[in-house]
Each structure stands twice: as structure tokens, then as C-alpha cells.
Image 1 (spheres, rainbow, N blue to C red):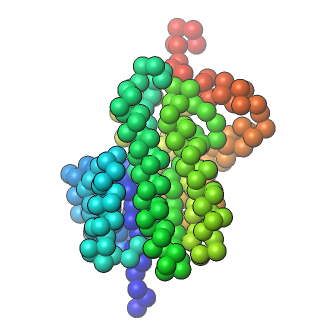
Image 2: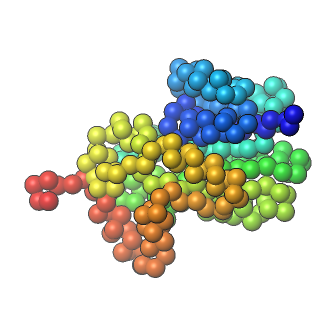
Length: 263
């Protein structure tokens, strides 16, 4: 029997991360699932254990030391990571001068620094082994600036640029890197944010199941960038053909709370 491969997925306790874990499990992968939400992560493990062998690591990756601890954990367990999925991340909504600095610095740590840190550690092992795959969850937010979500959009732009560069760098080492770019998706961040529901961009949400399925297939097909949804694919191309001032104005229209009195 062929030896099962192992995937490490961050932010796997719910949403896109959980359904990515399920996709990999249904396709003959063992799992290492990571999240700071210990209770939900345990529930996810219980569910996924019906499909695969599952190890869980409940730590907050906004704390730098926990990334090193995660790497030590997989080494102690003698787990060989064949696929890395950098999914953990979050966003904030509101005018930049009103949003929490602490939350946005944590966002930069999780959405950017943690991805770079963990990818560096796992990539070095993949290079020694001579193969591997990396799936980084970006967003259609990566293709233009986003007023009222300025820091979040910027972090997703970083992920897309970082992933695209690594695709070229790591190809000689037989390592595939894919950036997954879904549009607005039905996740806890969206569902719990009352203000997001008052904007045009968050009226029609993708299901996390669809995003996960397309993400898995994109990685299997060695795609460099995969945008989920035909409408989103069109919207991701438009900024290339319009001045940044125009694309930012368009983003602002969709990200500004609807004034029902004047609409």
C-alpha cells in the first residue's frame, strides 16, 4: 500500500481551513491541524479522525515563539510534512484611524510574519527531501487597495506576491507553490462582524466548502494562482487595466457601509 502523505494546515478549526483539512483527508492524507481555538480544534480533530490520522497543535501563531514550538512539535513526533497550507489569518473592518492598532499588528504577525516564518522552516526540509507543495490562502483583496480594510488588503497582497516569487524560486527543487484567492467567504470573521454585512462586497458570500475544494484541486494541478468564482476572476483582472486611483475608488464603493437613507 502506498504511504500516506501528511499535510500541515494552520487555522484548521473552522471555515476554509477545516474544509481544506477534510479535502486532504478524503484524498488519502494524514493531518497536522493548528489553531489557537483549542475547543474547536478538538472538535475538528474528532470529526476528521474518522477519515485520517490527525495530530493537533493548539497555539496562537501571532506569538512568534509558537511557530518555533510548532516546528519542534512535528520534529519531536517525527512527522514528515509533504504539504504546507498557510490558511490562518483574520481581518478587521473600519476606518484606519478608528480600528485597533493592537489587532492590526497581530494581523500583520499572523497574515504575514507567521507565514514567512513557518514557510521558511518547512521549505528547508522540503528542499532536502527534493519535493513538496505549499498552498497559501490569499484573497481577491490582493489585487487592489481596500479602504476600510487597508491593512487586511495589504497583507493579502503580500501573500500573493510572496507566493508568486516562491513559485519560481522553488520550482528547481520540485516544490509547487499555489496562491488561493477566494472572494468574500462565509467565515466567522464575516458572520460576526455586523459592519461587514452593511457593505456591498459582503452581500454574496462563497461557501468555505467550495473554496476548499477548488484550493485542493488548484494545488494538485500545480496552478500558480487560483481565483475562486468566474465573477471574481474578472474583478481580479480589472485592476491591471485601470489606474490605481480608479481601482481604489471602486473598492471604496464596495467596502463602504451602505447609507440606506440615500440609496
